[in-house]
Length: 133
Image 1 (cartoon, one colour):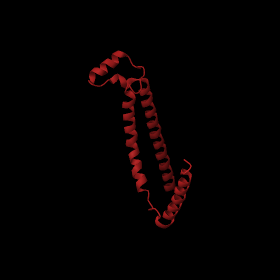
Image 2: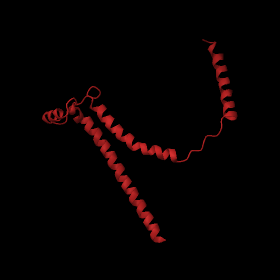
Image 3: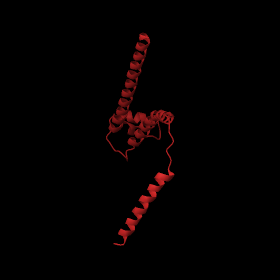
Image 4: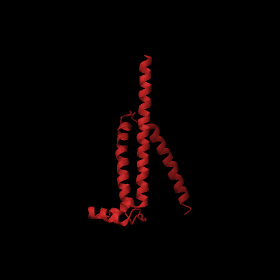
C-alpha cells in the first residue's frame, strides 16, 4: 500500500500539467450563444409540466408504490370501475392523489394569475407611454 502514495502523487502532478497545457494552448473560446436556445427550451416546459402531472398521477395511483386509504364511497368506485374495464379507477381517488392534483391545480392557477397580472401591467405601461407621446 505505501507504494501507491508516490504513484498517486505522480498521477496528480502529470494530470495537473496536462490539464493546464490543454486549457491554455488548445482550448478555444466557446461559441457565443444567443437567446434562441433558451427561448425554445422554455416552450417545452409547459408540456413537461403537463406530462409530469399525468405520469405522477398514474404512478401515485399504483397501490403497490404508494398505498393509501380510499376517499370516496365504494359504490361510486364500483360505478367508475365498471365504466372503464381493465383499470382500477378507485386507485385514482386516493387521498394522496387528490392532494397531488390539487397542488398541481394550485400551481397552474398561480401561474395563470401571475401571467394575467404581468400582461395587464405591461399593457397599462405601454398605453401610458403612448399617451405621453
